[in-house]
Length: 201
Length: 290
Image 1 (cartoon, rainbow over the protein chains, first blue to last red):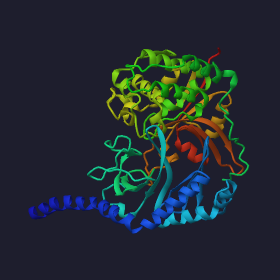
Image 2: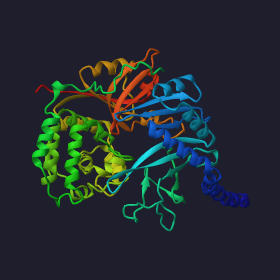
Image 3: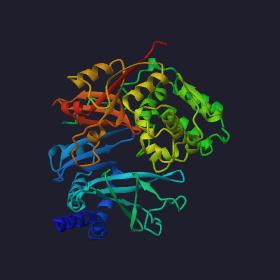
Image 4: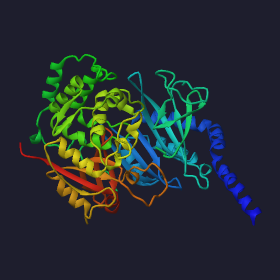
């Protein structure tokens, strides 16, 4: 009885530690395995955004229901659709979007388990700059007794500086850690960094 | 949930009525022109005076661009700022310039005299989007948050760096209504609470009715309205304040809600059940007769 109890005491922390280990493995491999597709999504999104600003959130487990946010200077329209439904196509036509470009982007977002894509503004020396922000929801990021995390990626246009621990630094002073959506980001390469976040946007 | 033929016009601002104005944009700009230049002030060591005046001009000319910042708890302060920016831009500009020059200023029944921690922080908030380049906005938010306290602020009453994201800046429903009553010449009524939704059988009709002659603010469960996680939480609590700008029904019965937050209007389509689920508080107010 006492022997069993000792085993339990040892197993619980071991199990807990095991449940924490998902993230490191995932963050190191997922981007590398899908580098080309990520870069392609980023490039196409930026081109489509320049024609007509928008953001997309995928809202369900099966990656079918989306919230399509159409941004104008004064108002943001948020519409809910199922991918592939006629209303989505009608709306894209109405707002003069590149329908095939958007559909292809949505399909690649599904492939990558991407739940959110947007263009985020940040400020350096008083000037607005933009980065493409992408969130990934993946079953490998779920673990027993752990709340779900999202693998969030920030794509910059220019190379960025990182500290010795690989944390993203503010370009303005080169010392302060830069936060995006309240989180710290870590290096993947000089223009892409990641974070594990409790929120996808 | 059709979108074609939406009766909502892009330029419309159904909440706003000219007749209720205490001052105009033109008067505010004339006043700011008369100020010409402000000298750096040790009371606000991190506020750039030129940028500060530029911010005030922007607030006066584009009040709906007023931005509360990313990942802050300033939404309640931002929502109520609609009132001075839209109806008394001159009064707001004067208030802000006095606050900058003397470190204290009066609005409504409130004499603001923020402490050193707040004065030193104004102008330093970063990674909040456009709020980074709005020292005037930072001053205003920090002053409001440091002056008004509710039970949510009980354990964190004094500003420390980073508190704009914490309970220090948060606002319960009673505090929100108290701020409106103390700051502006308004007759304010409210329904709802922080935990229990108001007992209204038909929110759509009720809100539509209130909007005819009131400015309406909503206290919402934003976790449902603007999902940031995929998990379904049973515990619903309101966390976000918005100004309701319009409400109309599509032919298929879908409710289109237009609200103002984060420096722009948002149109979202909901069904009646969902609207009932997210609304925890309704504050409706109108100006007392001049």
